Length: 480
Image (cartoon, rainbow, N blue to C red; front, side, top):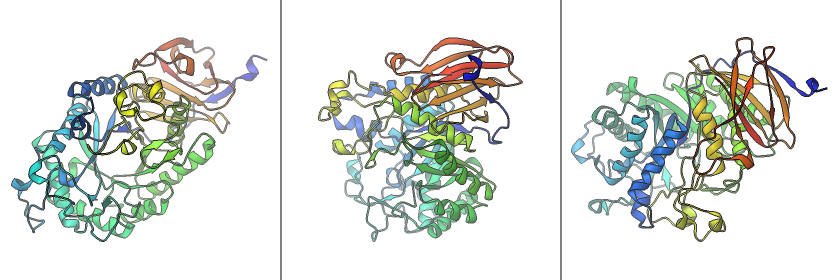
């Protein structure tokens, strides 16, 4: 009877897609928009971010930039003759960006720079530019806080100047990818025909400037339900894109695996039609309250759900994922509490939450949320270059994946969102020896920001690794 309760899982075919990165959003506002609020945060607090990024071994940052940070006013009327003397690469906003890139460079991470679009309302920290109230490329006809550029050649000039400065002047080899505009389908900032034209202009300019070989073009960046936008991009940007990505906030605790899997499988197939891979460029749960909150953010169970989402994406053929976002922070120094982005793996200073119902439960500044620990199992053990092998638990809310890192070592990761234990027996012809088991379980989380440690060892017997995945938990098996 003991034998019968174990579900046989065979490590069979890989997805054929190697992992590029398990990453996070890290928008560069810590020094420019948070320390300037005079609310109790201090420059030395940055070391907490540095230390945790190292502990988690995060592999990639997706990073926001805005055109006015380095070109507050149009340098001149000729987009093909750049006057670098009119650019402000030493602005406080850029210095804040360099702090993020210094960390990425030191950690040998990869960085995707996303120039978000053209803001309709601008407030720069340098008083010399206090008169600048809008991005000079913004579309005055459109509503919303940000638009697409009205002049693609000016946009290309601006983007090239930024990337050349980051890579060639400052020496950030970590910067190796760009995404022109965040969620361009939203609004839309640009309709797909306009976006396609913009991307082609950008591609030509990067080639002309000798920069195209230095960065990948990660395109589409569409929201979850507008798959037509991805399709239009794949059909028309085969020669321009290096990879495509989409975002998702439509999946939750009652979403079965096959729905999540099929969403990403469709994206993967569309990208494959253009000979390209697909990654998930932002994700979270479907418990959204506006753009800055998700109701489940502090729940332990969210760590199980986020792992389940990631494994579905990988099992469907995704080449990477980027979680939104690393930290709670303000995007504007004068923003009110409602505008604070609160989807981080950890919180901001405790006092910032004093009007919130959760305030009394917050013990410390920069307190980690439970999912800090679960996401760390992915970033610490599943490495770029890993081969991905889906494991079928035959369950709508429990899932598994085997990963073989490029050093040959195996990791098996399971997420169980159900109310009962799952007993699994993993058969893998290539594998002998022992595995360390790391468990994300509600009553067993580490103190503070200490990473989860291995609590037990499982041995391969008769070519099978047997283990229990408890209800509402995550288990990572790491080959010794």
